[in-house]
Length: 367
Length: 252
Image 1 (cartoon, each protein chain N blue to C red):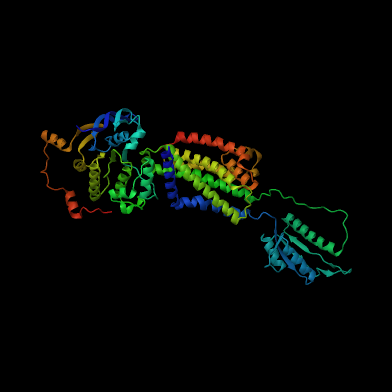
Image 2: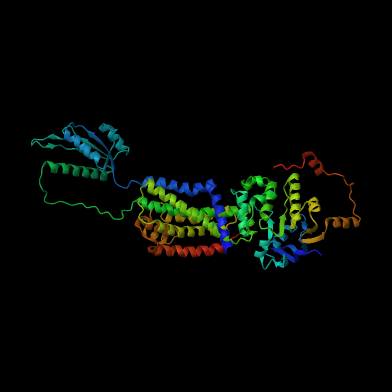
């Protein structure tokens, strides 16, 4: 019995050492998903609404100067400092480089007949984009209202109080990270084995192993152990990048994440094992692994969350093997749930695991 | 009386409707080098793989070191060493790592360096298998087959594709293995190899054994039938010339 497990351990360690020397495998395991994370992470990073504007100030009053400063301080507007003339600004807006132009006329901020600074600013916007124009004008009006109140103190009889609520406040990056983690686990399990096993069959490596007393269960156990270590490692790398580069807010605990990731890796490994164990060569395994992986990639919430799908599609994709993996990872990481709370996800993973391993042991071929 | 270590009786194998091994029987004695000769497709490899418990036996019986191969394939595998004709090792894994891994499959502990020394590959211990030459690969393959100190060593066409120097080198290695008391069963289609190495040979053709004896007795029988070569026997062959000109040194 001790010998049985020792053999598994020795083979797993040998395979792990071999893996660290395989540059192609290292690239696809660690760098490739990281590339996804960086590309999509950069796209989704900025959630809050902001407008790029040009500010043309023709007034030399102190009031106008202070107003500009206040707009700069706010987060809603990003002022393009390079644009100085109205014509240039209009041209840029036509090309979509800026959303709006604010023009302060020469008289802006000069005292009126009652001695109070006053003026009228103009907000230009593209006719095709009325919403932007309304929003910009609205925000400007608010800013001016604030100033007006300071100048002519009086209480307004009716006001609206705005109060934003803040709950879990999931950003699109939270969805992206769990999606990419799921993708990493899936591609490692499916593509790693579905390519690796047939290659070892073709060269006769598996045949040579079969000539020894080693059992198929030991070999599979060793490869599983190898993939478990690599899988957890790549999840850790991903998560570290998410935390350090993208300010990801990890709400769950790492032990629960590790346990859930273990179930997930084991499930995806089963798919790779079934495909690679069945296929005689890469010509058989490559199309089959793509056939299995691609629907999961697009329907289980890797690149965009499943809740964006039509409801009937959500209902179906809920049962795909990768969906509970991604949902579970997200629930742990962004909502701080524990493995014990993930009953529905674990149930789907469990059923798929039983099915796929039954299939894998039936279909396994040494040559 | 020599002790039989491998016994084959009425062994059969069919692929589809074609019978490739047709009820052959023979025994291999402990400590001898036993050769199975024959043209390609004679059934040599299939016969070997059935004895090695790598291929299901259709009919007949094979015993190895007192074990029924059909009934106890796992225990048989523990006691034999195999060099397969078409097999390879893992890439990006050193010779030492391979030996350690294969030893663990037998629950054996070996000193990789010493084992590599025996096949003259000590200086290649840290190399990957794919970096070895053809002759080195075959010697390494034999080293791996020896990790469990087998009772019987199977070599399937060990010298096919090797240059004359590497082939002679491998012959020396096989002779050394024989000296240690390990029984060797090999297949080949080189007659001079069989004559030089084997204590007894079985000649196979079309799935049947058509002759089985010591090489010298087989030659004697042939001469007894009144056989004469067309040409007067040369005192040297072209291979002798080749070796004389290029030397016995290994080229790898």
